[in-house]
Each structure stands twice: as structure tokens, then as C-alpha cells.
Image 1 (cartoon, helix red, strand yellow):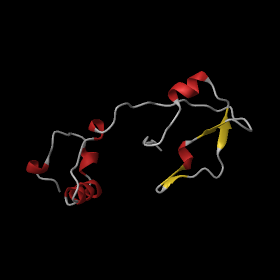
Image 2 (image 1 turned 135 degrees about the vertical axis):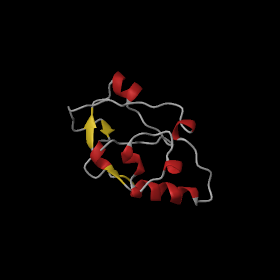
Image 3 (image 1 turned 135 degrees about the horizontal axis):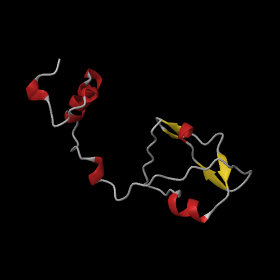
Image 4 (image 1 turned 180 degrees about the vertical axis):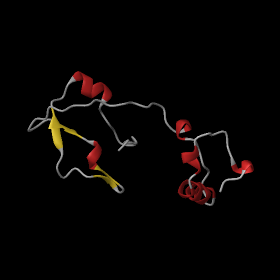
Length: 101
């Protein structure tokens, strides 16, 4: 049960599930300051979606490669290097990859 004084400015009931409340409470107990993700990033880019793979080229990181400990490139697919990929789809050290699946 959520009491009125526990409500934030959010109206979506999904946010107030016990598993999320527990996670938020745990975050408040750590010894690091909490910050909004938007204050830590400079740009958000929705990368390119490519379905035409090649035998050689640029490694193409797909959603399914994401693991808790990093990116699994065991069965990596390759794509042809194009201008569109180089502008929107390049990653570098320090980048954070977020997947929606």
C-alpha cells in the first residue's frame, strides 16, 4: 500500500510497485550521490537499424548481445561501413549502451 505522503509527482501506478520502491530505498542507502541520468550524459542517440549483414566489416552490436556483465560478441554480425553508420552508430570507450528489450 502506498500512502499519500509517499506519492511523488508521478501518476503512473506501475512506478509504485514494491520491487521498485525497494530498489529506490536501497539506492538511497548507498554512499554515492544519486543523480538524474540526464545530468550525466551529453547526447542520446537512437542508433541505426541494419538487417543486411556481411562476412566482414564493422561489428554490429545487436540488442540480444547485451548481458549483465557487458556485451557478448561471440556470434557478432558484421555490416558494411557506411556514412550513416559512422555518424549515428559508432560507439567509443566510455559510451553507455541502453537497450529497450
